[in-house]
Length: 229
Length: 229
DNA sequence: TGATTGAGTTCTGTATACAGAAGCCTGTAT
DNA sequence: ATACAGGCTTCTGTATACAGAACTCAATCA
Image (tube, rainbow over all chains, first blue to last red):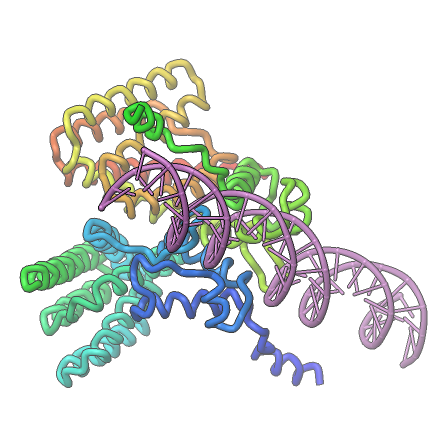
């Protein structure tokens, strides 16, 4: 009896998740996928009705969205979807580069054999997606690989910041930039090798160059798009 | 007349700052200065009465405090002052080191002659505080110098993250660690020289070592304190 | 004596109400 | 025709109300 309960308790009871969390997730999704456009005025009452809740959880979600940088909260005027400037986007990429570099260094210091195995699997998945030309799968594989490296780095503070910055970068660049191709995954191969060797300096250096190339790649596409328009 | 109005408008009208902001500031202050202790349960109604407002602005402030990492919000249980673990503190220091390093590199790239002048002034202020043995003034001078370097780096995203991380670091270490002395300010001198030359690599390297020494310094004091207890 | 159950209390989560600020639109005067 | 003033509408900011979840503690039973 006692044991049966203990076993059952391993899967926690489904707690009715706070509405504010659901609202927060819904709004970020709407912002990222472009349903809510930069600069748009978010009227609390409208959002509340649209989502079927009262204004209260909406306001709480908007508070969090502000600190996360998704919306700007002007006093007495309400919430507006944040409009990232080119400058801010460039700054985001720079910060992401140093965070990812640190992440790779830590990962090289901490990686266990099974971690390397997993990295190899993720690498293969990416190469497979590349071969098939499946863009969505490729993006997913890339994210999975970088996320796993961050998890191996085993620094919750760092992981939190990378997640924040990465989400913003994706929001800004996904609509305008295609993922990098073969070259990027060759770099991943080098990176995994360095991590496997436990060579933190080299892993960091490879990641730094890797993210810098991605940065250049994005910038070039922006410039190309700008000259087209 | 028209000109007079324009001149007057340069100082914006005093807008009745939203209560949530005042509450947020008040609570962070209470947490940092230790009035609210780690792990303590924050009851909304109590805070509201204590601050003379309703629960609503308090809740909104708590939302922001959570995303900033000052409190943990457990569903259906409310807010608890965050208890930083040793591990988290160590992670914070590591992240701060890479962010400050990047900050120094950017500062070296961007610094104008007047920035160097200002850096020299801040340096002198620190040395003066050191000579007087005025701890409070010394801490203020150190913060001012680092903050100014960050502002010269001219990266708002980076500045935001450094501010967040730095505040947490100070919260955790101020009660247990004394500021570093002469050695730290010699390192500052070297750093300013590198920035003045525009040598980003060297500035970054000096800052990296500087923050790492600070990290070691903190850790040793923690260890010493732990062995005393 | 110790575990357990159940009522009572406290606190959160959500909804609603109301006052005041900001923006808009129309009417009027120059 | 244009600028300004005034009222009207809309929305936010804040307060209050209420339902339900979590905790407390004492009474009960093994």
